[in-house]
Image 1 (cartoon, rainbow, N blue to C red):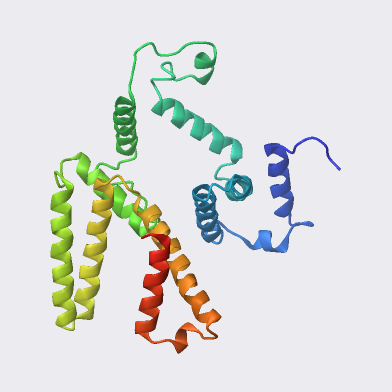
Image 2: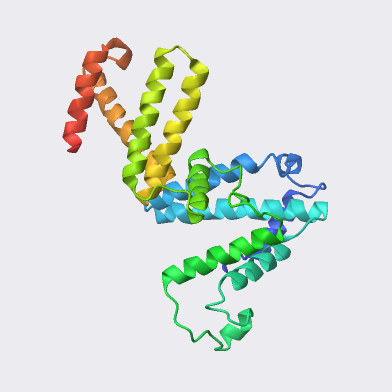
Length: 276
């Protein structure tokens, strides 16, 4: 039994052994970049859930699971000759040095560690402005000239909508206040009603997308993360429905045995008990 803590080097060695054709893990050996993407996304959400619950012991474990995803990709990259873990780290450090000139004016990590820091005062707004300018320059170097270029298509739809809107806002394409956004939401609701009444499923689908997109815009103007807001709403719905279900179980019944009117009354009772 080892008394000292394991290190990143130990984790890299473990990963290499899992992928070793001679004695490795059959499941790990079958994986590819594409097949572990769903696990990566799931682990990221589990990290977010632990943070929102302030479950820091669990967060410790979930961060390890997320780190393992990076280690897995690094091993695959090494095997295929694309990159390895050390190159991932080097690329990240160089990017962060480049994006923080207010902390590393010479662009050198060790210069800052030796006491060389920027003497010009800078506030958070300037940091954000500089950060976006540097990122824009990086996108330009990659040939991404459009305002919306570089917004990952693999992001959750709500998150991507917010990022697209934020990018458009930077070039002046935005409502000056949330009032215009709320008016737009009402307009989209009316158009959705028209599509539903006309019996046009395809049109209704499109109008529903427009409505959700407008709601994301409202969240952005309120400085609310739409993904987090919807996760909170999901948890609230789950909690309240579980309350309805628990009450019916006490009566020896199931939700399917109750009428919609009864379910609504129970829902209102649970909601009232929560004070909202």
